[in-house]
Amino acid sequence: MGNGKLVLGYVHPTEVSTYFHNSMMNLLVADFNGKQRIVNGGGRVTRYSSANISNARNGIVKQFLEQSTAEWLLMIDADMNFTPDTVDALLDVASKDKAPVVGGLCFGTHDGVLFPTLYDFRPDDDGVLKTYRYDEFPDNAMFQVGGTGAAFLLIHRDVLVAVEAKAFSKTFPWFEETSGELYKMGPTPVGEDVTFCLRVQLAGFPVFVHTGVEIGHHKSVVLTAEQYRLQREGLKNV
Image (cartoon, rainbow, N blue to C red):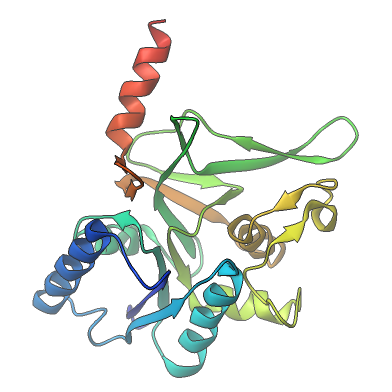
């Protein structure tokens, strides 16, 4: 049995989104008045991030493992928008053995078009792994993926210990921008969050996203699941 305690970890560029600030304040108040998984679990670990976000993310993990006895680390990006019940919702479905890495449903945007950060890796006819994005996903369900972003990602301590033990990199044990050639993906750049998910799977653990835990992403506007659904309906009607 784990202790159910949680540490919040986030990187920031010295400033954070107002949406994130309000979300974090509301979460901490709810936790204090509720199960106190955070206030009695280790609180928060933060790191300033320049362009080298991998270094900041790894610093958070290292401090979590060395200075906390909490069971879970929740990585959050400083431009995310979430409700106070999202942590409990993830912890309710996560488990040390069956679902030790669970993300919330997050979205990015490219040329004004929203996309969910839900990825899979499948070999082509030549055996080269290709990255595919899931455009469709089940509602309010645990959805196993090949990878997802680190914008709102719950990770069990045992996963982080196991990934470090695999010794992928002494300098960047968990998060690192790498080349796809390391993972039979050809000469393509791989972001630090997807690299982490690939390393998690190579260490023998699955990655899930709980599509019922909808997380907003604050760009010039907040990217939400509802906006994505409306966009999908609009495309179907074209």
